[in-house]
Length: 243
Image (tube, rainbow, N blue to C red; front, side, top):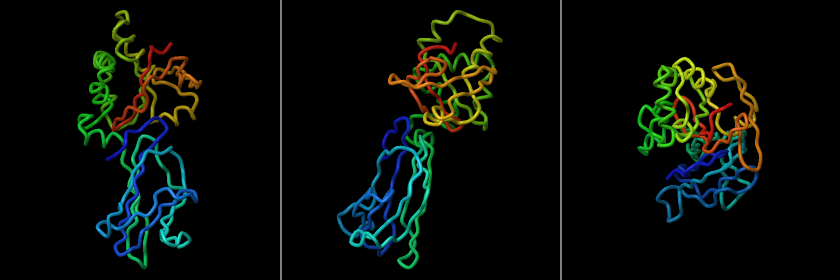
């Protein structure tokens, strides 16, 4: 079972699939992370383990549990991507063990769980989130739907329904400009947003990211939900329209 992810984290699973191999430890940055995993069916011990961990880059190795200095296989600079699930399996033969890695975006898992309608575009994600349906309707009204259903990735800073429901009526052109001011090119998860510090929206406006003990802010507007997944981008929910 995949764990739910928090901002700044990714899912990590390690599987011992080296047939005939003895129990192993998975070591991350010289610290045992998972202990005494066995080949499936060899005894009652677990063959895999999963958890949520901070995203980042780590050195890992699979070592014999009975002889920690006997490293069977290792990988340096393994990236644990934010808002994604990374599976690492110890495979191969006893003479040539190796680590095999697969990364699955959170949007794919959300589709599999029935939480995100396929194909899982940004428009699908907006419409599926009960707090963002007004923003989705505004996108349709402004004629920007095709922009958010294509293959190019975008990040949306989307005001919640209670914000949009209280907006005064404006022209379609003005609405389109307003909405473009909440969209930036590229797929930027929470940590990448914080690291970037500034963005230029599709409307040409500058978005400045700040952080305090209260949270992450875009032009002074609080992000109240982060890393809402989509196959062609990501959504961060705001508690106000961007000034």
